[in-house]
Length: 428
Ligand code: PMT
Image 1 (cartoon, rainbow, N blue to C red):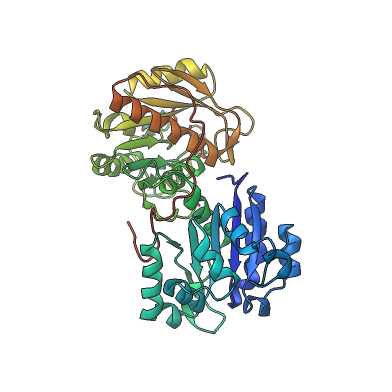
Image 2 (spheres, rainbow, N blue to C red):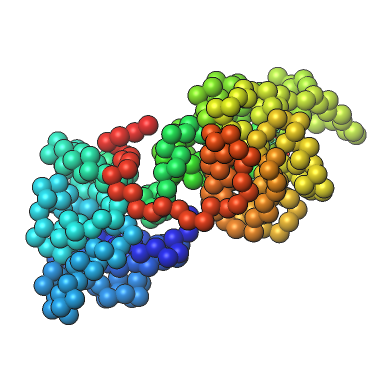
């Protein structure tokens, strides 16, 4: 998700992972955010204001009683100016102070004064993290709507192996994006298919296609950000399971159909981004087929159509398909919309530059019975949000018994402190 126009206040506290702060700032800025940094006195032992000022392009604040800033009541300006506050790394000490409502330095004062959503990324020794006092303090903050990012497991600076590492900046970015996103899917259970399928020829060979899973995974992340319970059924990909998403990995079209059939009843939205093989070898060999001279013929049969046969239709469920086409895009996509009894189809010209298989961007046209909406070439994360915006409009107009509008949503609500807590303390 892009963060243009968003102001992130990064609070860095005194743990060894503070050395990662410049990397976090860079990642946030690469997504378009303005980043202002507040360092605690202990953080100054690990990272310098100069390095953070250089990467953020902003003055770094370290003291509550900085005369230059306090003449303008600096801590209130920082608290009010933030769209979201990220504390990374967050030490047990700062977590404890926040849970107790203490405000004895610049960062804790801002945290009491801000009305922006707060994301906390604890990083510390595994035994400190698991200490019941720290866990109780985190639960208290979670209960107040603060978003707790569970640390990673790995080797820790203290020599221990375990839970306590600060997650990768991309994970923190995803949590910041989620804190800023609307929660308009909080009542939805979204089932998404992604990736290719592999249809075996023999134990070592298969028929497949070029799908990387990126489009479907972007949809899963976007739906989770917007508050949905998400189930992702994916064919083989090299992508890691998205956080806050239940991911089920399958191999063949048959397996995908079976899993989707089982999950679809609970789903209120189903989005089929998977490039399911349309054909499979009709008699896969049990042993590796030996090489033959001359021509060979592989007999194929049709696979089950997952979206057409495994998902029951009804007023309580919006069903979205994709159409990957190389010619007659709109006409063919419209045909699939009708034949597969879909509510919406995402027409994807997979021959266009920067679109389709295994790239970071996509170029699609959304088609439903109310009309078409051609979207510009943009990141798959942005395409995913646009598809969800359209699904949300379909849902609203269905509830009101109207024809759906094709007008794009103009603004999204931001800042939703108190909305949702994830991570170890509350998992779906
Ligand atoms: O994964 P990426 O590398 O990011 O690439 C993204 C993508 C190009 C795969 C994606 O944007 C896309 O277009 N997905 C649909 C690919 C496809 O198989 O389209 P289709 O026109 O053949 O199928 C139409 C619809 O029926 C699709 O929703 C498909 O998931 C579904 N289908 C097709 C065959 C089948 N046996 N079962 C199905 O459910």
